[in-house]
Length: 99
Image (cartoon, rainbow, N blue to C red; front, side, top):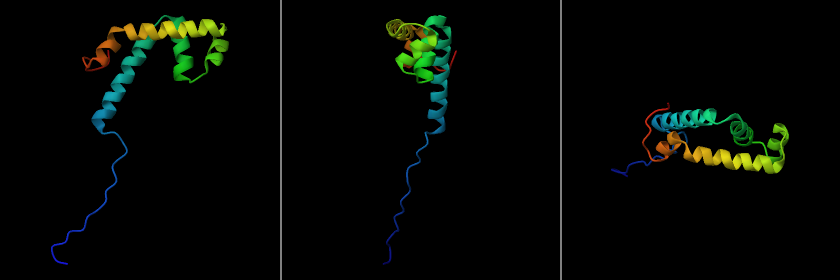
């Protein structure tokens, strides 16, 4: 079998490339900064619900508020995050590095 080449299987690397890792770290810095800038009542509900992955019931209990109040705060926190200029710029691809 002259001229035949042996095909080798090389599995794809499951890790993101260094550039993508850097971009992800920068996005995380921007999000953390924006969350840090929220007023404490909104920041606390985001931190417990999203970062510590607590249920809404657990979040409300930890904050000593009703479930309805917890849901309202989460709604207002999400609205504040959507309006944050740094996150809007990031979604539109205009941010180069974390502030």
